[in-house]
Length: 559
Image 1 (cartoon, rainbow, N blue to C red):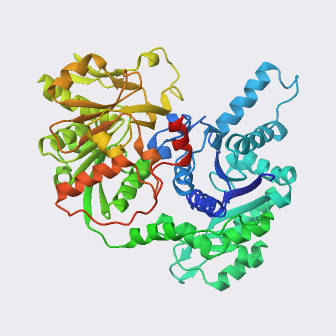
Image 2: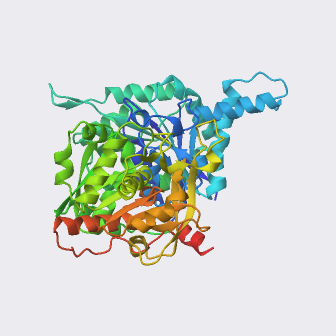
Image 3: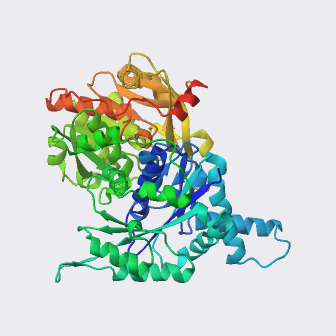
């Protein structure tokens, strides 16, 4: 069949929920038997978010092929349970870099380079690559930002042209807007939505569906009003009330028959009847009152929880699988260095240190790790969290504080963590780390082996520094186990401590492969140890999903 396209724009305010809406709609279409992929168009001029501060952009989400992408791609993968690729995140920086490169080579034969047609053609080319590289039958495309932003205009123009290129029967435009609530009068207001749609129509795009986001119920009169003034079917005005449980969004969209409307609009027949039984069971389990465990997440971007979005979601997924509620306490490592926040650490049933870069707050994280070691509190370290576990244990084993990573102290006497050899001649910081999916051999008789139940795994990486093999023998004798190695045995991927109930660090980022109905096994093992430390009995939980790994990954592992 000819590829179908669904385009998402946002109105009134940013962060209105386009990413979650696109992800949820992708799941609706997958449930009807179609192969789906999602693409994010980001208007910023950075090539990718890899060099951007987490305070600016939230987490950097890494794909199998090593692409550093927007965090919305995490929503897409978690909801739809697909593996996306680098063409699924496009930025203004990528588009202009490609066009300028072609101009320098003389590909345009001396012609004047303009936004239309050269920039818009490059955007459309990249949209077309999604179906070609993923085999998707339906491609959902989200534009970052808000209608009216000057930087979004080339993307909106490209989307306007797409309707002519692919045909009206193969394209749908969805506008996600915000309905503000006026407290003085107790009213929801549709006027900003009307203005937003008018702005969109002035560009040449008339939305087919309007998703009206609100913190308050949207009555039928408001739906009628939006339909009338924005020239869409009443069926196509979808109220989307703020939902504390993200995973209820697909069920809400199904309730309003959005999937059926899209089938009609795109001239498609569902290949199967949507089965929501497992997803409903997932939501029911989220809502159910459960025993609570406390995990202290020690980071340095904790003011913005989106900086650790995948870690937060992975903890929630694992807790659900164990019949538990996880309470995450966000602890700033810089505050620990000043002697503040230790009461939170002391009350925690488990400690987690996620990834990060730079020396700020490092000693606070190491102190938290030392506390977990001395008090036998379960610990999970991710990427930097694994490296700091090595440093903390190295200081204990070598009986000196002059143990460090050359990332933080180039003159350290004991560089137990050092720059990867192939990184030493690199000058450009963007897109040059060890990135993407790599194999790891699990060593038998270890906590990692018990957690995974597999001999060979594949996990996503994002780092420049690695374990220094010069210290492998001395640390192993002191009680450190190297439970995950690269197939050639040269790279340490997982470390754990033999004399501790659960103290594990991974050089990779397992949080990127966690799914709501298929939690990551390391997170499950960690929270099970946290449960035991908290003195909570093991819960009986019906399995939310049956497959242990996605079909694509299972096939890759078999090969």
